[in-house]
Image (tube, rainbow, N blue to C red; front, top):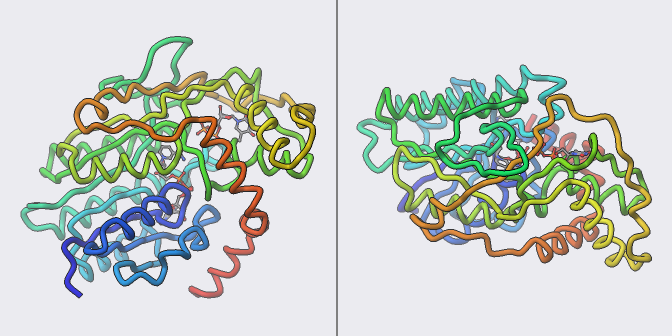
Amino acid sequence: MDFKKQILITGGAGFIGSHLVRLFVNKYPDYHIVNLDKLTYAGNLENITDIENNKNYTFVKGCITDQQFINSLFEKYDFDGVIHLAAESHVDRSITNPLEFIEANIVGTVNLLNAAKNNWGDFKNKLFYHVSTDEVYGSLGDTGFFVETTAYDPRSPYSASKASSDHLVRAYFHTYGLPIVISNCSNNYGPNQFPEKLIPLVINNIKHNKPLPIYGDGKYTRDWLWVVDHAEAIDLIFHKGKKGETYNIGGNNERKNIELVETLCDTVDEQLGREVGSSRKLIEFVKDRPGHDRRYAIDATKLKNELGWEPTIQPEEGLKRTAEWYLANEKWLENVTSGAYQKYYDEQYA
Ligand code: NAD
Ligand code: TYD
């Protein structure tokens, strides 16, 4: 079959990538979507079983740190675009093992940039889209917002590795003329997120009556965005964004961690038929994360004014849907936390 475009999505078995792959495969039947993923602990093909047999979809297991393999993939498929999400993504893990983040997030990105640069001829109608985070901007005080021109000030090994990859992507634009676009997004939430991140961790622990660990004083603030809204923003920027530009994506939905966790307690209590508020007793203030960023908040005016994007799901509705999904998908939770899926994929792809 002749496709209008061939697009490489990296990290498409992960949390955000799975929603993006589903969106692209369903919305663009005339595009061939190649999903490249290493299937680390966070990557899980169960996230996208609904589209795995589509004619316009191909899954490839592989690692972006393997330059030879990445080159061969670009030789095999004449990609028109890359949407690069594959990364190590958890701040706490980056504190215990920074090198893994340098390799996946920096070296992996450079490998993809080189493959695009070396295989894409005159770059006409090509696009390298790098999916990044607002954490590159550092930490805000009680007021203010990150805009696209905010100076980078990353403070964790994770955010430093993402900042570094953003810089390299821009360097390839300026040095080699590689057509690129970058988006920096706030904290996502929704189905398929590995339960080491705050929201799925808390929902799972409430269900099992386990302690809910709140780092430090719990007044750290994040801006939360429904994951499908992020996928839709990426779609819009990929198709309509200006080459060389950066777009901030945010939920306009700031919450202090303690408030968010209390809301989740009440939501889950209601869904489980428990006395509403009873799970709040599980909250435990624990030792703070080193270098913990105090507050993130995004100003997404540029994306709204230039491309007309706004979040569609309100936080109350989004949190309700998220809790419902994790409570209904007990087996998924069991499999990701026990490593059962990973064992299965290791055997299947050995
Ligand atoms: P995730 O950890 O859920 O998924 C990452 C995916 O990348 C997994 O499927 C994993 O198997 C794959 N991967 C990791 N290393 C790889 C490698 N070396 N080669 C090939 N595949 C590899 O992450 P996520 O939360 O879905 O984040 C996706 C992207 O979006 C990341 O680049 C992250 O920095 C960015 N981002 C995340 C958020 C958020 O709130 N989660 C917010 C803004 C930006
Ligand atoms: P997390 O989901 O790890 O995302 P990020 O660090 O990328 O923002 O954490 C969200 C917030 O929740 C962050 O301020 C750290 C805090 N947190 C806790 O208080 N307890 C936890 O167990 C976790 C995982 C996070």
